[in-house]
Image (tube, rainbow, N blue to C red; front, side):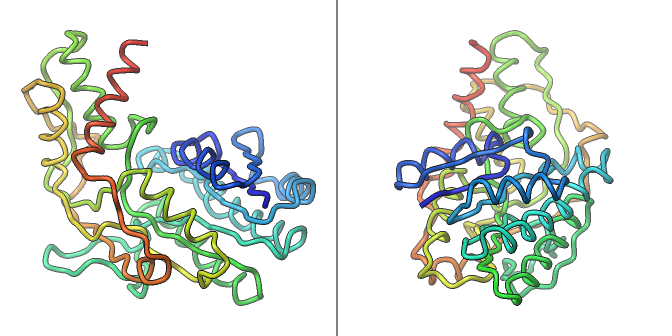
Length: 297
């Protein structure tokens, strides 16, 4: 079985590729050397590789960066997905496609609201989420045309190797620098009262692997823990592990209104038996350890 990954050098791709190889797949990974916005190039590559499964991870994944580069974000997140789906339909119509969407497509929830199920309406609020929502809906269109498309909506996930543009590594990097005396004892934050559904990247990768099984029905699946955690609690856990107690300062550029985004993964559990296995505390250990290693390099 040959697996083709776009965005293979990204955060999730670097964790996913070795797991696929361990599971017996021949992995062909492409990253920025493959322009997913170029339909002809992508069509030719899919034809050359002739994959059995395709995992489409390539995206502008940072909401903050997407705010500054909206046109590029739409091109990569929507046009890139369309090009990928069209190329598979033409060149590898028997392949299973794992199209990675996002829990962000659901938008905001009220504090008392239950976790989002896959049947919740899509109400994206950012350029990132709008591009993902459009690609998600397009994936459903190709599925109705007969393509084997599995759409996944992962909620917040973190772990070693994630960019500091995301909340957990941003906190960890600053905390490690403060502990090493390389930064004044002041840590910049956004809104600490937002609620997020945090997963370890290894649990997300496990969900993706299980969804490649052809016995699992195609469709749309949330990847989520169902547990809402305050961003401020995430910060406290990382500071405790770093052994620092800095002054906390709100950075206007990072500040967003407090919101809640928690997912219900009942459908995924019933279809695959998947459950998140990595304890939240272990994830925090791994994130801090990663930034300690980077600082020592």
